[in-house]
Amino acid sequence: MSNVMKEYFLDLDRAAKDPARKVAWCTSVGPAEILRAMGFEVFFPENHGAMLGATRVCMETIPVANAHGYSPEICSYLTSDIGAYIKGITPLTKAFGIEEIPRPDVLVYNTNQCKDVMHWFEYYASEFSAPIFGIHPPTNLPEIKPEYIDDVARQFEALIHFLEPVIGHPMNRESLKTTVALSLEATNLWSEVLNLAQAVPSPMTFFDSTIYMGPIVVLRGTEIAVKYYKDLLGELKEKIQENHAAVPEENKRIYWDGMPVWGRLRDQSNIFKENKACVVASTYCNSWIFSDFDPEDPLPSMARAYIKIFINRNDQYKEDYIERMVRDFKIDGVIFMAARTCPNNSNSSYNLPRKLKDKGIPTIIIDGDLCDLRCYSDEQSTTLIEAFLETI
Ligand code: SF4
Image (cartoon, rainbow, N blue to C red; front, top):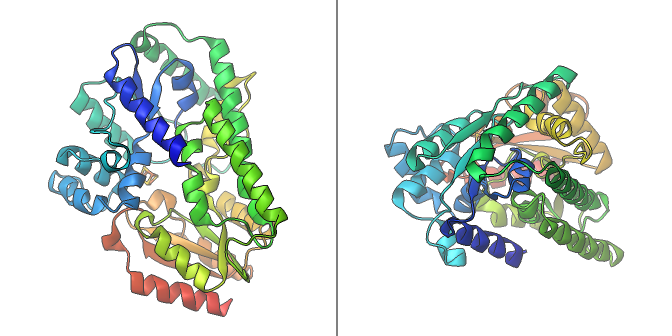
């Protein structure tokens, strides 16, 4: 895993310094397949935001963005990342000896997840004087209608026309099919990996999966991601055969809704372990399952896959989804992480936890944030989680 991510970043760094290669920035659930198929190297600022969170470097950089007019209430990936850029630092330096993030030749965002990404990418488009393209799909959907798919597929087609002069050649449609096929293979393997946590005891926890998910975010559409998930699947299957429990004496199984608190992964993992509870499934890690990809029908199938993601759906869909997960993974309780700076990935504000509770599924809400640890109390969260685990 370390080598896969290291090589990905080192190659991006080389690409950024090579005038013959082009770098595109893309949102985490943006149309990365189009970019890769056209020959761009792809950088994902949200992944950089998560690194800033996990290393807690964000606590130095968020205030810098705040001082430059970005509110502490908006996406803390955005504020962590823009603050780091203004300050001239990146966790890539300590991790891989890379001096700076790769400069973009083009930026592509998709508002299927939120509108913060638009503001975020517009900032950099202006900073680097780089061209920018936004995909704006319908949002908060109860169902996926054919006209939504047509709309987004047409936007993807327009994106291709926009990118051709940037990369300097027309899109090779066969290459798009190959890239979508590789993405499909990787995402299906990722889905298989996550489903292995249905085993009792589970061979992995949510906290492991937040690390395992790196390649499906940044390397989908490549052979590297496919190989990585094949290897991981093999290792986890062996663990199941050996009856290996990620949490020894596992006796409670938890579902995590919302984002990870990146700067507290280890601490939270320990709280659950000490209480013999395993967080076996999550909304977050499942967000990179795109089983609708179809290499024979690339743009419409990508349109469907990228608009039907959990974050882009209405509450009834989310309720049904979590109920299904509770059943399939034999879950004893659901934890909703209410991220202060990401209402888009927080599902506790409109009665969803109460509705699940009324159906006999224990739930709690913990306040926190993906990056900004000023919004997270260790004591309160530990007390809440331990009390919850005791009651279930
Ligand atoms: S979904 Fe949330 S965390 Fe992700 S970019 Fe948007 S506001 Fe930030």
